[in-house]
Length: 252
Ligand code: SF4
Ligand code: FES
Image (cartoon, rainbow, N blue to C red; front, side, top):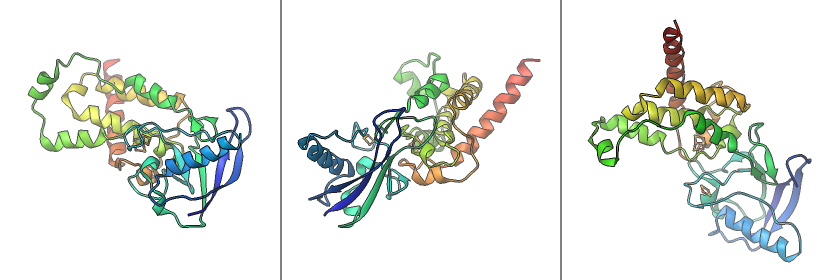
């Protein structure tokens, strides 16, 4: 196939960027989307031009590094699929494909298609962990947890922190990401000790980093490669309300 690509190029965080046209020749339907970009970059390097910067690591849909908006959709047209798992057979010969970085104030562009997602790390560092001594793995396995609860917690733990939910949201909200981690830990006994502090700290950090609030658009759920449901956001809201009550009662 031959594809017409319109790719966002931006030399650095503080310079203006814009869409630049490229042609991708000899694209195999078996290639992944990132392999197609690798081939485009090999051609650019052979011509002595600057390669297009984009993020990737595992290329197996598990690390959350690949962060491309393809034809206006974070992670592209396939539901429940990261862009590294998207294949070129999804596109037609002669098609024009527009590729842009995540767009959100809290995810500034570093170069071309690479954005700085360290705001997510700060949210996790604010409370997305268990710091009490839970014992070793055998101790964890000895705690009885109902199967439906453990499965719900496991589903929430599937979030890979990619940030597509933020990129798709008109409010650039991090609610789906936060709610996945908060749900996972609020559902399990190991997460109970820090339950109140966790939700308050994570939401405070998200506000400080410039993420917006949630207005129930559902765009986050639609693009999430791990299909994290927005019912997690409802659980996070209940956790937050509970935490506000508990902290106001304990300060009396
Ligand atoms: S909730 Fe989904 S879209 Fe958001 S960071 Fe996690 S995996 Fe990515
Ligand atoms: S490169 Fe790891 S999820 Fe895409």
